[in-house]
Length: 395
Image (cartoon, rainbow, N blue to C red; front, side):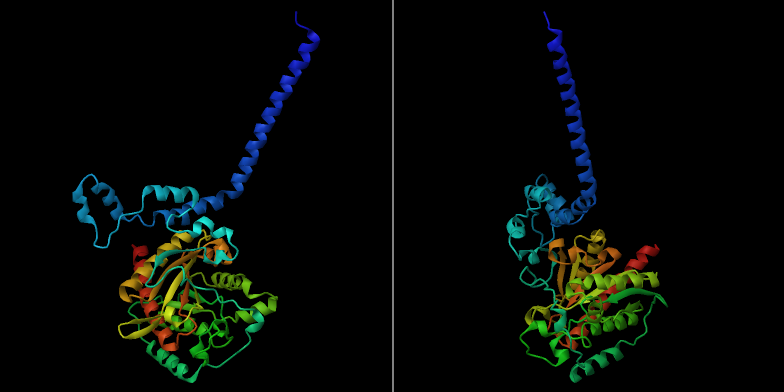
């Protein structure tokens, strides 16, 4: 015979346990939903852009023929001479699942080593002589060490004036009064030893100046683009002065240049392209190329992976790199992408436009002739890309 006094507590205990279980499940679901909501945008971009891009970048259209030719050997006739088989699907699956790249040991332990994060970049497209030992190095010395205002070396000044005269040509097509390209210099203090009359200086950190610096390269590019019919605005803000006024260090230079670019975009709605020009701190042997009897300062395109417009910027960078390889083989060092851990949170202000790139032009030892040749070459290629894009948009 059941005891009514013992049966009631058991029933009550079961009800309480059931309710507790439901509450626990709801708590887990709500917590999971909150975490997913917070991380969704970041996760979505990571999967959409760099991880997928890196994992599948080796799979060209020919790779489809490669898999098909295992069943029908006639498809092998579609291979180009330099075609090599794509990586195993197992390697791609591993990278997509864990972001571990079989051919890159940095992905196994790089995040665990102090200071190793500066090499946590991806060479999306490699130019001649480019590997992880020759990737660009940021030039951001202490702000107090950037105080000089030197005049341009007389010999280099002559070359500069001659280049300006040669740029005054009439283009076949023009953007008219529209200034569609905005050129700026986040590290405006970056300079070149020959321009400062300091050839042979061993310490690359001394290639800085508040007057004779990278802004000259930007001004040359503006002139060359104008000669090619493309209107541009060249910002020559003294970033050292601006940072000093704010009491900021060089590490906040991108925050400062961001405000400059945002103001320009508000004032000029015609701007479609943003180009941030820098100078690498590598030495001459790694930043100089001889092409058809002329000496050039090699250049590299840098993109930020955290930028939500990364995919669009990759397309533009790839098109420019490939055209440089075609017309000026050896000039481009390639296209490099940087993660959040390797600089400016992996952004570089490139979220402000889906047509935004950062270019490293030469190194501390390149002279005005080499810089001029590179600027002309880049303007030639960029102009071709610009007018082709305009033609496609019009259609």
